[in-house]
Length: 314
Image (tube, rainbow, N blue to C red; front, side, top):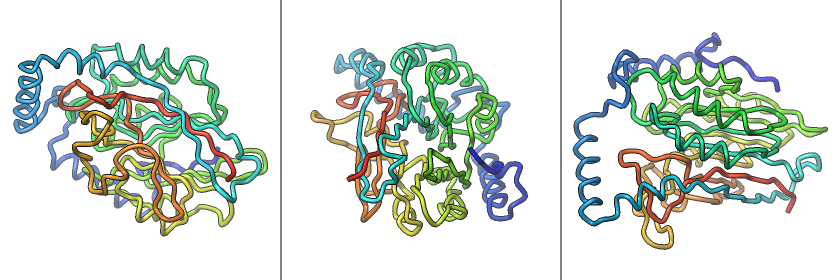
């Protein structure tokens, strides 16, 4: 796979400017690496405590915690009228939002068992590797590595950053052998077909995503895949003839009404993009419910998932 370097290392003004914007934002938000892990702002603490107390009083807190560990493998098929023959049956394993917690390896163990022996053509990661925003993030190398070692991916693993990830996460991913794309892209050759993989930086918190840079060097012919942390770049993706858009961030609502009906999306997008398969003109997209949780470690009517996606011709 031919992947350019990330903006942290690459002397490209557009990417470098956005990377510097992220670094300044991390400093402005106080996301310093020397801070203790999982430190939250006081507003988050109060909100989490109030929600937890309410769930305990209702007697459903334990149920929600158990739900959050009932990880599923979700399988979806995407059909495209002009899909190259070589990409028919191409399998993508999509992992997002694990939100690992230090000294709690339960989710990693469950996920490793879930993916054990899975053979795919490509594995993609769409951000948010830690719970909380503060402190060193290197610890997620162990749980994520435990999962990735169980996956057999023909073309390796490609990943991006999310709104819970500091710049340090990019180096952790690289050390695990992940191709990190930050407003960048690369060409994957599968048989006689070209598959372009673009990856943006986070569009939700850091506001430094560029679909233009992620798709800038995409060949005129071939399939176009875009990885973004949230569905918030979907409209821009239309301008660059993206075929498939993969994202997470919303957790599928995390706490839903019976039947999986979303209460909130937690993203600047239409509710229709909050979970599962969706379409926007010629663009097909998928928003995974993700593996983990935030604020409160519970899920209701919204099981965590790892997604196995297959490309087919319509």
